Image (cartoon, rainbow, N blue to C red; front, side):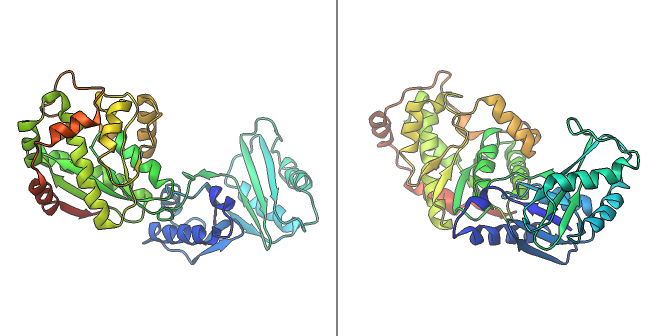
Length: 380
């Protein structure tokens, strides 16, 4: 038996069942190919009926990545009878060497005749009499007991999940994915808030184009572990970039590059029914991410722009990238088209009027249309 708990979903009101159903659906997709009897919604939990030891590591590996899951455990199920619980606790303890231990009981079933403290003491005595030393301050292992409405769950290990909300419960967003460290983390942060993500990457035709595109695919494949399905738009940017270089002074090119990327992102969002855009911007990290420049860049967006990393420093973002598994791929060398042909000292305090005046000399409507029509759309 696998018992899954959520936290934030439990705070929902009349629409809680919507979030629970979405979580159950996502769990079902994630467990495709594994054998289990059923996935059922319980009181503030989800219960998977499956053989205790079969594919345990694979269940664990997949479930702990699903947004919406606060924690889970593999449980021994017992009747709501203290003598039966003693037997099951003894059986559970056979998998471990005697060591300092504690028993921790959660009594959601208030009709059960013993209090949590009494259950802790009664069950603890069973192990203590068999040579297990009690240590409530610093136990080496804690045997946990949950007293539910119809049965009791006993377990010794709690596996943390990502928390948050189920993917697909909060609409759809388009994430601009550069291939670096920050943008995959930003996408993950919004996945964890319940949004499903469409990925958008811009590339140039260079000697390392295929290497860069392969790297971005690998990043999306890693992120795909956190949502049931993923789609990646690969958009060629070279023709647009040439047009920008011909007209825009080098100190402003990064800003104009990104504004045009937002224009294309607007079109992709319209195609896929997305309600917003996601970027990996962190305030002040690079020249294009000053308040003034971000204000000018975001003005080109026709949808809300979400920058979930805006207040994080680089080390915090690196730590998150390592945690979600994208870091090692993100640091591989790649060609970032935004960094090509820009000034060594780019503008840090652009104003919208000046940028729009410069852009008035750009005639790239056909290039924008052609870039989107030439986009490679990959289902992951």
